[in-house]
Image (cartoon, rainbow, N blue to C red):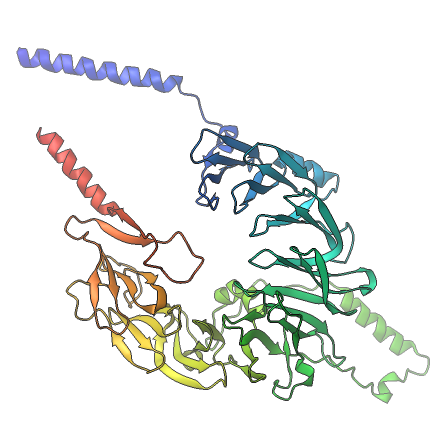
Length: 590
């Protein structure tokens, strides 16, 4: 009887709960498409001022009506702007500049009226809250010394020229200077030198100028009726390169001269590389603008990209008989009409793809890499000390990357193993930047097992046979770093389709190539690259806690142990599920 009463009471309680839940569900509104449009997302990107006093982040909506938030990290002070993006803080933390666009409806209305959408730029004083709005600004930047704001307008409507107005605004004196017909501009890292390219109407006055923002002086670096492009500063110094286009009537594309200024803080001395006047430049090749020339860190080399130069098609000589018309000319006129009719017919594109088993790359990959292949160039070096030119990449070894400071390069030749359909592999070489001489490092090596070079260029790092290895570039010695460790560094959790099991990962190199940080399943290890020592710098295996190294400063390619290091500590998702199961079992037992 008691059991029956207990069961009845329990049944009533359950029924009551279900009915209440149903009532509660009835009260919940039904989501509509308009509700979905208001869903918010917080993208991973955020911005922090150099002094750490301000941060900015965006909240995006499905309907694209996003909002930029700018908040103080140590006070109850914040700003928010709809349709804003790309904030840039001044290094002194006093200013922030950002782009402000329009809502979706506003942009649609502009499109209907055939108006060009031109964003604004807002300059906000973070201390006072005062803001200034600049109309029609396409790009902007604040100098490293926080003294100048550089703004570029949009090019004139319906103009084939790239020239636009460049506004140099002094943040201290609040004065501005306007420079017209600027197609490209670039500030050096220090923020005291502004280089820009003039692209004038009918090419009158084309050239490259330098604005010294400390002395307010303008110098002329180059002047010509031709086109200039690709300004590029060396990252830490006042060395500048740019390109000047010139044409050869026998070829289709523009070739380029390279201008190089080594120390614009103190000297206007220039060096010019003219491929048309050099015996060491390969015949039938040209310097292509799709690769931006760049300096080596020691300013002894300039890297540039070259490609095969396509000749113009020569007009075919007409056969004398072909120009003769028939007796009354009707036959030839009929042929012309028939040819015109064929030309005017719509060309039908077949709706099929033809694959061939000898294709080096399958069609889907060719489609995915189309833009990269279209703009591809062979990496080459202009050595300034000896004034010699060396082509490093070629048709076999197309993939080339700099090692450390660029005195040598690593190349991969995949041609002996093509066609390749899944895991790409090739022969790995080291090339000398001074003379182009190559040295074989590894044969038939998987591309995705190569982990790059050390910051100072002393070692290569790669993963092979479930172990981490280094290659000493100077001595040519291979060292297995992890073979004698009792824990695995290969990913024991990997269940993918590849036959080569990947590693758990690496955390980067320390300064001076002293150590490389490698991961096992739980911990971070510091290995000497010559294999002389290994030490575990975390202790997560005991508690099944995963430790990883988190970099927040990418100014340098290495980790400086003298500066604060930020480890990440977390449990794996499957371990958290296990903990939840244990807690549920414990609650059930209770």
